[in-house]
Amino acid sequence: MLRFLTAGESHGSTEIAILEGMPAGLYLTTEDIQKDLDKRRASAGRGGRGLIEKDQVKILSGVRHGLTLGSPVALLVENLDFPNWIDIMSSHPSGDMKRHPSEITNPRPGHADLAGAIKYGFSDIRNVIERASARETIMRVAVGSICRKFLLEFDIQINSRILQIGKVHLLKSLNYKQMEEVIMEARKRKDTLGGVIEITAQNVPAGLGSYVHWDRKLDGKIARALMSIPSVKAVEIGDGVKNSGKFGSEVHDVISYDKKFFRQTNRAGGLEGGVTNGEDIICRVYHKPISTLGNPLKTVNLKTHKPETALIERSDICVVPRAGVISESMIAFVLADAFLEKFGSDALSDIKRNYRFYLDRIN
Ligand SMILES: Cc1cc2nc3c(=O)[nH]c(=O)nc-3n(C[C@H](O)[C@H](O)[C@H](O)COP(=O)(O)O)c2cc1C
Image (tube, rainbow, N blue to C red):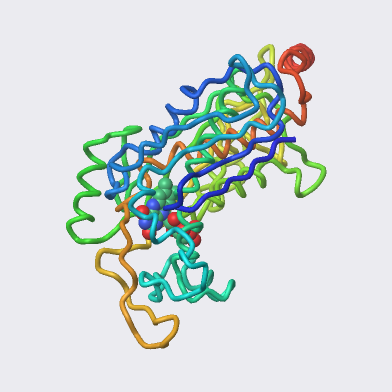
């Protein structure tokens, strides 16, 4: 139903995305997208790039007079830092394949640097870094904003909160000062931190997804989408991790009825058998600490095979404060896709009518 592609290098001129399958008739402005891009940019735990990136989005196609047309929506974000990288990112002026003076040969543990260079036969790790960088998640957020706007037409809302940074469990949803202190401590030690984010989707109807085939199960689609975010190393649905150590009687959510089916608890996180059950969808993502370290780890030179220290590239300390919006965006995309699959796909007005019929039937 819905699909998107992104393109762009971290220090290239632009990041772009094409979203296909968004129905006609959705009001969409650049401001809808811009507010999510701003959330991804500004926060504690950022390195120098946070000050450079302004990430202004442009809508290039698929929207006319403020309404989506049903045709592909093309988006673009220019990289304001590109002029400083133009020499490194451009092809060699003479077109020959001479070694660029900035060639990188000391791969960083925890990055795609070594595996990527081996895979493509590159002698310059910059070729890997540029696309493997999480800068690409800008376009996931941009695409996710459109999906989120679509879901809001049906009152489906997606939010996130930070549960943990490093070893510190945060009691309130987002205590900026508390986060800054923990991250500042890591910065002083020239080290990095990971953490845990919880994402919740509210007002999701029962019946999205499918139990009939492994690749249609919505829990699987959500897990894949979240796991694809750089530095996410585990995904949890509901109380999945805690539940594995309990008795079944303590875990499963008793079914009740009061004008409609509901649960008094939601330990399943809104998904049973790969299908939404009408409760909130609750997921957690576990981010590893950033791999680029101020005190770099030992590595081996790609060419000489001699020991070296890993590359120090301009880098954040902790991605968690600004990564929530990326997870929200990925869930928005998966839910919008599942919604279109169930309720139709071309015109927003048709989809609304189909949805009303469905709600009448199930409530
Ligand atoms: C928003 C965001 C920003 C990131 N920034 C950095 C960074 O500045 N430095 C770094 O080493 N890793 C950063 N990462 C993580 C790496 O991109 C990631 O660890 C790396 O590409 C390897 O992928 P993997 O951890 O998923 O295996 C960031 C991740 C996200 C989601």
